[in-house]
Structure formats: structure tokens, C-alpha cells
Image 1 (cartoon, one colour):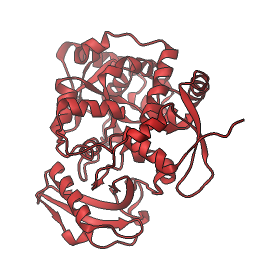
Image 2 (image 1 turned 90 degrees about the horizontal axis):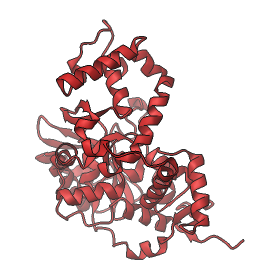
Image 3 (image 1 turned 45 degrees about the horizontal axis):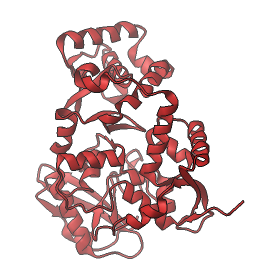
Length: 403
């Protein structure tokens, strides 16, 4: 067999950064059209509730467009309805144009939710009656929030682990595609019937299963540049590894993709993978990365696969939100720093909303410290995004910390 073409770690990194919008000029205006195009290009933006600095979806978009502000995303989700909220690997803002493909996910969830013991326990033995009651109320009275229902399990806590039956029912009906997120109030979901929130999308049928699998694999690879079948399957969580492997075999036979060996920055053995057919031409077209540092959300798509980030960037990253404080190596909410196309540092910021201060709790450089001015500029851009009036302390950007 002829030897497979090699894709260096730097080339694979550039393909990923380019596909995920991190090589473009972030100084471009954040118009609705440009923001919509960015989300479509990325595929989706993960939504997360942690608000130590700002919610993850806003941090992800703000790292790509300087002028982005949270109301811009609200416009697309709640006014134009060109994005909708549902699941990929996690809760995400997704282009509404992709909605027909989510019908397969809705159906899969309807078949399998009974296997979720935790949810069934939250719903209780009369779950059908609870869900019928939710449907009737929304159809008759309009959108609802979980807080519109009393917790009928006296003495049990609220919050994530103490979901009342109605909250569990709302989530089941949302994930099954009967309900949609019409808007958010203080980040609380407001649920309404899918046909009322997205009437045009709701009227469109699901594509045939094989057409859906082809779409999911092809579009995933397009947004990764180079990937293994497992990475393709993990992108949308729309197909399984077996379907992704089958698609790769068939797409290779059709000449639509190319088999390659992807190298790692640490010199480890290359990994067998597939690449978009035009990966060499894409590399030539990619722009020079912006000459700046920027802080990335811990949930940024280039960081989501921690093993890939280590292979391509030499950056060993772990979110320590769920790590007990004494065992954290860095901090509760640490944002990686991208300098051009290198991950060069970690910063632990916290937005003190009572004083309007973006507090820098720690900076850890990978290797030698870089220009402090560039990091200060990145922190000032982050402060503008979240609405902080100042960054403190300024000298925190000057010296490395020891993990």
C-alpha cells in the first residue's frame, strides 16, 4: 500500500482553528448576519450556566468578535429564530436550518428516556399524567417556567438534583422535541410548544436516516478539518462510532475524503484519521492568525476534546469546576489564553459585579512568560464584553504563578 500523507500537528491545528473561526479578524462588526454565519460555520455554540465571568456561550462568541455582546445572541435565538436551543454533546445554540436533522434525536430520546433511572425517579410513577398536564397547560395558557409549578415533594431540595416532577417533564418534552425554549428569563428556560416557537422548521420532515448520517459525518469533518471516526461521531452526538466508521469507508471509496496520518506536537506515533479532500488547499487559503492574545471559554470547541488539545497544541487542560478546592491545580474557572495559534497561558478571572471589577486571581504561563501588554489588552477586551469597569490587579499579568 502507498504510504499515507502526513498532516503535521501544526497543520491539523490550523485547520481546526480556521474551521472554528479563530483565524478570522475579530475586529469585524458583530452584525446579526455575521454572527449567524459564525455559528453556522462552527456548527453550534455550547450553552452553559456558570457565570463566574460570563456564560460560556457569550465567552465563546466574544473571543471571535470583539464587538459581540450578549443581546446579539438573544436576537438570533428569540427574535429572528434563526438559532434554537437543543442538545449536541451538551445544551447548545444550533442553526435552525439544521432542525430537520434533530428530528432523529427527538425520536431517539422518546424511545430511550425510560432507560434514564434518575429522570424516571424525578417524574414519579404517574409520569404520563404529569406530562399530559404539562401539555394541556402550555397549550391552553401559553409558555411556562419551571418555577410556575410548586414542588410537590415536600422536604426535598430544589436545584439540579432535586428536580420536581414538572421540571423533569418539561425537560423530557423539550428533549423529545414537543417543547422548545421560547426565551430565557434570568437564564431560566421558558418552555412553549415547538410548533408555536418554530412553526416553519416544525413543519419540515426528518431526512431519511442514511441521508442524516451522511450529513452528520460530512458536516462534522468539515468543521474539524481532520478527525478520526470517533471524533466525527462525537462532534454532534448524532451518530454512533459504528455509523461514523461506515461513513468514512464509503466516503473514502467515493473519493470525498482522504485518509491521512496526523502527527502530534510531542512526537508521539501519528494517528490514522481522515481529512477533508481539499485540506491542502484549505491550508493555503487560511489567513495569518490575528496578532493578539485572547481568553477562551473553558467550553470552547477547540478545547472540548482535551486529548486533541494536548496532541495539537501541547496544552494539557482540565476544567476544575467539579474538582474539590484542595485538589485543584489552578482554579475553579480558568480560561486558556490563545496567542495567535498557540495556547500559551491560563488565567483565572472573576467578575466582581458589585464593584464592576474583573479580578485576575492567577496567571500561569506555558513555558516563558509572553508580553504582559498583550495579555492586558486581552483582559481589557474581556472586561468590555462582561461590562467590567476595570481589571485588577494590573500587575497580575506580569509574572508566572506556580500551580
